[in-house]
Image 1: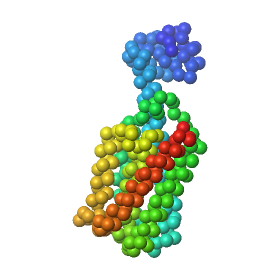
Image 2: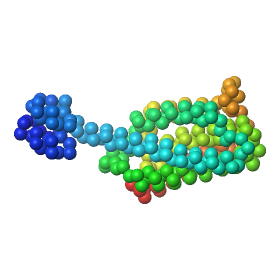
Image 3: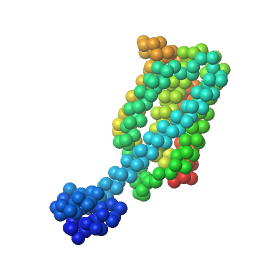
Image 4: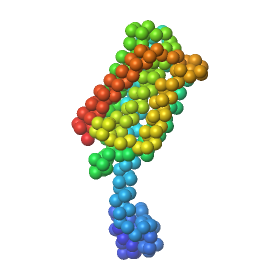
Length: 253
Protein backbone atom coordinates (compact mmCIF):
# COMPACT_ATOMS: atom_id res chain seq x y z
CA UNK A 1 0.00 0.00 0.00
CA UNK A 2 1.42 3.40 -0.93
CA UNK A 3 0.83 6.81 -2.43
CA UNK A 4 4.15 7.94 -3.90
CA UNK A 5 6.54 7.07 -6.70
CA UNK A 6 8.84 5.38 -4.20
CA UNK A 7 6.04 2.86 -3.42
CA UNK A 8 5.47 1.76 -7.01
CA UNK A 9 7.92 -1.15 -6.92
CA UNK A 10 6.34 -2.56 -3.76
CA UNK A 11 2.82 -2.08 -5.14
CA UNK A 12 3.75 -3.94 -8.35
CA UNK A 13 5.44 -6.77 -6.42
CA UNK A 14 2.53 -7.28 -4.01
CA UNK A 15 -0.26 -9.77 -4.65
CA UNK A 16 -2.67 -6.89 -4.12
CA UNK A 17 -1.56 -3.30 -4.56
CA UNK A 18 -3.58 -0.51 -2.95
CA UNK A 19 -3.32 3.25 -3.32
CA UNK A 20 -5.44 6.25 -2.37
CA UNK A 21 -7.34 8.91 -4.32
CA UNK A 22 -4.84 11.73 -3.71
CA UNK A 23 -1.77 9.59 -4.50
CA UNK A 24 0.59 10.27 -7.37
CA UNK A 25 -0.53 9.23 -10.85
CA UNK A 26 2.14 6.52 -11.10
CA UNK A 27 1.11 4.97 -7.76
CA UNK A 28 -2.56 4.94 -8.72
CA UNK A 29 -1.85 3.35 -12.10
CA UNK A 30 0.26 0.63 -10.48
CA UNK A 31 -2.36 -0.20 -7.84
CA UNK A 32 -5.04 -2.86 -8.21
CA UNK A 33 -7.41 -0.81 -6.04
CA UNK A 34 -7.63 2.90 -5.35
CA UNK A 35 -9.42 3.92 -2.13
CA UNK A 36 -11.91 6.71 -2.79
CA UNK A 37 -12.64 7.22 0.93
CA UNK A 38 -10.25 8.22 3.69
CA UNK A 39 -11.10 5.18 5.77
CA UNK A 40 -9.21 1.88 5.99
CA UNK A 41 -12.41 0.14 7.11
CA UNK A 42 -13.31 0.10 3.41
CA UNK A 43 -10.76 -2.72 3.09
CA UNK A 44 -12.38 -4.75 5.86
CA UNK A 45 -15.81 -4.21 4.32
CA UNK A 46 -14.47 -5.29 0.93
CA UNK A 47 -13.09 -8.50 2.43
CA UNK A 48 -16.41 -9.26 4.11
CA UNK A 49 -18.31 -8.60 0.87
CA UNK A 50 -15.93 -10.84 -1.05
CA UNK A 51 -16.38 -13.68 1.44
CA UNK A 52 -20.15 -13.22 1.31
CA UNK A 53 -20.13 -13.37 -2.50
CA UNK A 54 -17.96 -16.49 -2.46
CA UNK A 55 -20.21 -18.21 0.11
CA UNK A 56 -23.37 -17.42 -1.89
CA UNK A 57 -21.72 -18.64 -5.10
CA UNK A 58 -20.95 -21.96 -3.41
CA UNK A 59 -24.57 -22.22 -2.22
CA UNK A 60 -25.80 -21.90 -5.79
CA UNK A 61 -23.32 -24.51 -7.04
CA UNK A 62 -24.18 -26.92 -4.21
CA UNK A 63 -27.91 -26.65 -4.86
CA UNK A 64 -27.68 -27.09 -8.63
CA UNK A 65 -25.13 -29.91 -8.70
CA UNK A 66 -26.94 -31.94 -6.03
CA UNK A 67 -30.40 -31.59 -7.55
CA UNK A 68 -29.24 -32.12 -11.16
CA UNK A 69 -27.26 -35.24 -10.28
CA UNK A 70 -30.20 -36.60 -8.28
CA UNK A 71 -32.77 -35.87 -10.99
CA UNK A 72 -30.64 -37.70 -13.56
CA UNK A 73 -30.85 -40.92 -11.56
CA UNK A 74 -34.52 -40.38 -10.74
CA UNK A 75 -35.52 -40.01 -14.39
CA UNK A 76 -33.38 -43.00 -15.39
CA UNK A 77 -35.14 -45.15 -12.77
CA UNK A 78 -38.58 -43.85 -13.75
CA UNK A 79 -37.97 -44.75 -17.41
CA UNK A 80 -37.61 -48.40 -16.34
CA UNK A 81 -40.68 -48.32 -14.11
CA UNK A 82 -43.33 -46.21 -15.83
CA UNK A 83 -45.27 -46.60 -19.09
CA UNK A 84 -45.36 -42.79 -19.42
CA UNK A 85 -43.09 -39.80 -18.81
CA UNK A 86 -42.68 -38.97 -15.10
CA UNK A 87 -42.99 -35.28 -15.98
CA UNK A 88 -43.89 -33.50 -19.21
CA UNK A 89 -41.39 -31.09 -20.84
CA UNK A 90 -43.70 -28.12 -20.19
CA UNK A 91 -43.95 -29.14 -16.53
CA UNK A 92 -40.15 -29.25 -16.27
CA UNK A 93 -39.94 -25.79 -17.84
CA UNK A 94 -42.57 -24.50 -15.41
CA UNK A 95 -40.69 -26.02 -12.48
CA UNK A 96 -37.45 -24.36 -13.64
CA UNK A 97 -39.27 -21.03 -14.03
CA UNK A 98 -40.76 -21.13 -10.54
CA UNK A 99 -37.44 -22.06 -8.91
CA UNK A 100 -35.36 -19.59 -10.94
CA UNK A 101 -36.43 -16.55 -8.90
CA UNK A 102 -35.54 -18.02 -5.46
CA UNK A 103 -32.33 -19.43 -6.95
CA UNK A 104 -31.33 -16.01 -8.31
CA UNK A 105 -32.12 -14.45 -4.93
CA UNK A 106 -29.31 -16.54 -3.43
CA UNK A 107 -26.95 -13.79 -4.66
CA UNK A 108 -28.38 -11.40 -2.05
CA UNK A 109 -28.79 -13.97 0.72
CA UNK A 110 -27.52 -13.48 4.26
CA UNK A 111 -24.36 -15.36 5.22
CA UNK A 112 -23.72 -16.75 8.71
CA UNK A 113 -21.11 -14.93 10.78
CA UNK A 114 -19.12 -18.15 11.14
CA UNK A 115 -18.69 -18.37 7.37
CA UNK A 116 -17.48 -14.76 7.20
CA UNK A 117 -14.91 -15.27 9.97
CA UNK A 118 -12.43 -16.97 7.64
CA UNK A 119 -11.79 -16.99 3.88
CA UNK A 120 -13.58 -19.59 1.80
CA UNK A 121 -11.73 -22.07 -0.37
CA UNK A 122 -12.42 -23.74 -3.68
CA UNK A 123 -12.45 -27.49 -3.02
CA UNK A 124 -13.43 -29.64 -6.00
CA UNK A 125 -13.26 -32.82 -3.93
CA UNK A 126 -15.82 -31.42 -1.48
CA UNK A 127 -18.08 -30.35 -4.36
CA UNK A 128 -17.87 -33.84 -5.87
CA UNK A 129 -18.68 -35.50 -2.55
CA UNK A 130 -21.59 -33.13 -1.98
CA UNK A 131 -22.99 -33.81 -5.45
CA UNK A 132 -22.86 -37.57 -4.97
CA UNK A 133 -24.18 -37.69 -1.38
CA UNK A 134 -27.03 -35.22 -1.81
CA UNK A 135 -27.78 -36.43 -5.32
CA UNK A 136 -28.44 -39.95 -4.07
CA UNK A 137 -30.36 -38.56 -1.10
CA UNK A 138 -32.62 -36.64 -3.48
CA UNK A 139 -33.01 -39.69 -5.74
CA UNK A 140 -34.02 -41.86 -2.79
CA UNK A 141 -37.00 -39.63 -2.03
CA UNK A 142 -37.89 -39.34 -5.71
CA UNK A 143 -37.96 -43.12 -6.05
CA UNK A 144 -40.03 -43.38 -2.87
CA UNK A 145 -42.48 -40.91 -4.41
CA UNK A 146 -42.61 -42.91 -7.66
CA UNK A 147 -43.37 -46.16 -5.85
CA UNK A 148 -46.08 -44.65 -3.66
CA UNK A 149 -47.78 -42.81 -6.54
CA UNK A 150 -47.69 -45.71 -8.99
CA UNK A 151 -48.05 -48.84 -6.82
CA UNK A 152 -49.86 -47.61 -3.70
CA UNK A 153 -52.14 -44.86 -5.08
CA UNK A 154 -52.38 -46.50 -8.55
CA UNK A 155 -52.18 -43.09 -10.21
CA UNK A 156 -52.42 -42.66 -13.97
CA UNK A 157 -50.30 -40.19 -15.92
CA UNK A 158 -51.73 -36.77 -14.96
CA UNK A 159 -52.12 -37.41 -11.18
CA UNK A 160 -48.70 -39.09 -11.10
CA UNK A 161 -47.02 -36.17 -12.82
CA UNK A 162 -48.81 -33.76 -10.50
CA UNK A 163 -47.60 -35.64 -7.43
CA UNK A 164 -43.98 -35.66 -8.59
CA UNK A 165 -44.22 -32.03 -9.72
CA UNK A 166 -45.27 -31.00 -6.20
CA UNK A 167 -42.68 -33.20 -4.48
CA UNK A 168 -39.88 -32.11 -6.80
CA UNK A 169 -40.77 -28.43 -6.57
CA UNK A 170 -41.04 -28.34 -2.78
CA UNK A 171 -37.84 -30.30 -2.21
CA UNK A 172 -35.94 -27.90 -4.49
CA UNK A 173 -37.33 -24.92 -2.59
CA UNK A 174 -36.56 -26.29 0.85
CA UNK A 175 -33.07 -27.48 -0.08
CA UNK A 176 -32.31 -23.78 -0.65
CA UNK A 177 -32.92 -23.06 3.02
CA UNK A 178 -31.10 -26.19 4.13
CA UNK A 179 -27.91 -25.71 2.10
CA UNK A 180 -27.64 -21.96 2.63
CA UNK A 181 -26.25 -22.48 6.16
CA UNK A 182 -23.83 -24.95 7.77
CA UNK A 183 -25.98 -25.17 10.91
CA UNK A 184 -29.58 -26.33 11.29
CA UNK A 185 -31.59 -24.32 8.78
CA UNK A 186 -34.05 -22.93 11.34
CA UNK A 187 -31.16 -21.28 13.24
CA UNK A 188 -30.14 -19.04 10.34
CA UNK A 189 -32.13 -16.11 8.95
CA UNK A 190 -32.47 -16.13 5.13
CA UNK A 191 -32.29 -13.04 2.95
CA UNK A 192 -35.50 -11.06 2.40
CA UNK A 193 -35.84 -11.69 -1.34
CA UNK A 194 -34.95 -15.37 -1.03
CA UNK A 195 -37.69 -15.81 1.57
CA UNK A 196 -40.32 -13.82 -0.36
CA UNK A 197 -39.73 -15.52 -3.73
CA UNK A 198 -39.68 -18.96 -2.09
CA UNK A 199 -43.01 -18.38 -0.34
CA UNK A 200 -44.58 -17.21 -3.61
CA UNK A 201 -43.25 -20.26 -5.46
CA UNK A 202 -44.46 -22.59 -2.69
CA UNK A 203 -48.00 -21.17 -2.72
CA UNK A 204 -48.17 -21.34 -6.52
CA UNK A 205 -46.99 -24.96 -6.47
CA UNK A 206 -49.78 -26.02 -4.12
CA UNK A 207 -52.45 -24.04 -6.01
CA UNK A 208 -51.49 -24.86 -9.61
CA UNK A 209 -53.26 -28.27 -9.85
CA UNK A 210 -56.53 -26.63 -8.70
CA UNK A 211 -56.50 -23.66 -11.09
CA UNK A 212 -58.72 -23.60 -14.23
CA UNK A 213 -55.78 -23.94 -16.65
CA UNK A 214 -54.15 -26.86 -14.77
CA UNK A 215 -55.29 -29.35 -17.43
CA UNK A 216 -53.46 -27.38 -20.12
CA UNK A 217 -50.13 -28.04 -18.40
CA UNK A 218 -50.91 -31.67 -17.60
CA UNK A 219 -51.68 -31.22 -13.91
CA UNK A 220 -54.67 -32.67 -12.08
CA UNK A 221 -56.18 -31.91 -8.64
CA UNK A 222 -55.00 -34.32 -5.96
CA UNK A 223 -57.28 -35.58 -3.19
CA UNK A 224 -56.41 -34.13 0.21
CA UNK A 225 -55.10 -37.49 1.46
CA UNK A 226 -52.73 -37.89 -1.49
CA UNK A 227 -51.54 -34.30 -1.21
CA UNK A 228 -50.90 -34.89 2.48
CA UNK A 229 -48.80 -37.94 1.62
CA UNK A 230 -46.64 -35.80 -0.70
CA UNK A 231 -46.18 -33.22 2.06
CA UNK A 232 -45.14 -35.97 4.50
CA UNK A 233 -42.49 -37.16 2.03
CA UNK A 234 -41.25 -33.57 1.71
CA UNK A 235 -41.16 -33.23 5.52
CA UNK A 236 -39.07 -36.43 5.78
CA UNK A 237 -36.78 -35.07 3.06
CA UNK A 238 -36.29 -31.79 4.95
CA UNK A 239 -35.53 -33.54 8.25
CA UNK A 240 -33.00 -36.00 6.82
CA UNK A 241 -31.38 -33.45 4.46
CA UNK A 242 -30.78 -31.05 7.34
CA UNK A 243 -29.14 -33.76 9.46
CA UNK A 244 -27.07 -34.91 6.49
CA UNK A 245 -26.01 -31.31 5.76
CA UNK A 246 -24.81 -30.67 9.31
CA UNK A 247 -22.81 -33.92 9.25
CA UNK A 248 -21.33 -33.16 5.84
CA UNK A 249 -20.08 -29.67 6.65
CA UNK A 250 -18.69 -30.72 10.03
CA UNK A 251 -16.62 -33.31 8.21
CA UNK A 252 -15.52 -31.27 5.20
CA UNK A 253 -15.19 -27.69 6.49
